[in-house]
Every structure is written in C-alpha cells, then in structure tokens.
Length: 192
Image (tube, rainbow, N blue to C red; front, side, top):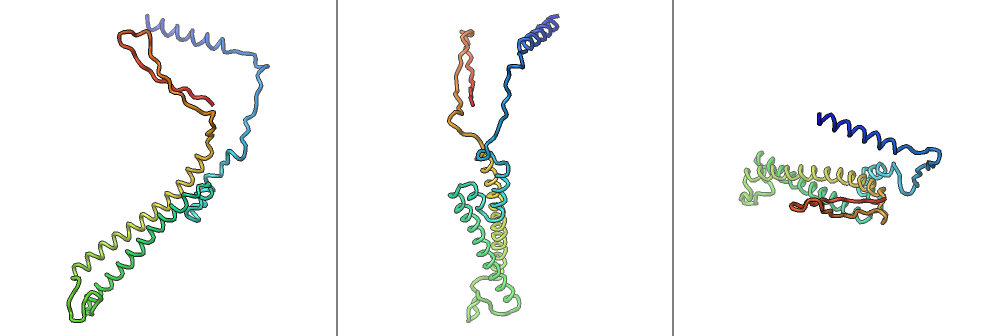
C-alpha cells in the first residue's frame, strides 16, 4: 500500500510541474544560432591531419603551433638516423660474416690472421643490429602517426570557446539538518 501511495504522489507531482510549465508561446522569440566562420571550421581537423600526413609538422604549422614542428622533425629525424646507422652497421657485420664463411679475410681480421671478433660475435652483432633497426623503423612509424593524430586533436581543441566568461566555481555545502553526523557535499556551478 505504501509503495502504491508513493507512486501516486510522484505521478501527481510530475503532472503538476508539467502544468506550471505551460507558457504562452506567442511571446517567445526564437533566434537562430549563427556560428562565425573564424571560430568554427569543421574541416580544420581534417586539413591539419592531411598537412601532417603530407609533410611531418605541417599540421602543427597549420594550427599555428610553430614550436611543435621542430619537435616533430627532431623526433622523426632521430628515428631515421638510428634506422640508417643500424642498417649500415648490420650490413657491415653481415658482409664480414659472409666473407669469413667463404674463407676470405674480412675487416675484423688482421693481416697476420688475428681475429678481432669471433664468428659467434658477428652473428650476435647481426641479431642485435637487426633488432635495433626494426625498432627504429617501428618508432619512426609510430611517431609519424602520433604527429598526425596530435595535429588533428589540436585542431579540434582550438575550436572550443575559452572566453573568460566560462567559469567553474566550487562550493562546499554542509547540511545543517544533520547535527550529530554532518554530511559534506560538493557542487560545481558553471555558467556560459
């Protein structure tokens, strides 16, 4: 019986609130929301991503975040440098291993026949350099994709309104009805 009474009270309160919500619609003015073209450009994120894909750092320059472009160039350039260096060293040790397997003197064998690096050492160096080369390639691709994503996300975020009229004011409310065990609540009020 108590549950039915609570449901009926809730429904009657809901309908009474709806009754007060009725207003004369002839006095309401409807204004169209117009977005200025300088604040919102729906193609801006795709342009930034496109420019970054064509030329690394191009999306950052398009977003007018000029200081990010040298960071992108340095990051991708570093991975390219390590890829080339590891690839050249791998080729060097691979050539020495092939020559030694055929019984020809390689660069790691002296004129008197003294071996500076063993055959097992040449094999281990090849494995390590190949792994480092592949990791450099993977990190370069990852950095390339990340700079495209960063340019696109940054272009999205640049379109948000960050006027000074936007604010959040935290307020701590103490419930005065509960004297023996006070409860503390937290509310955030924001205005546009």
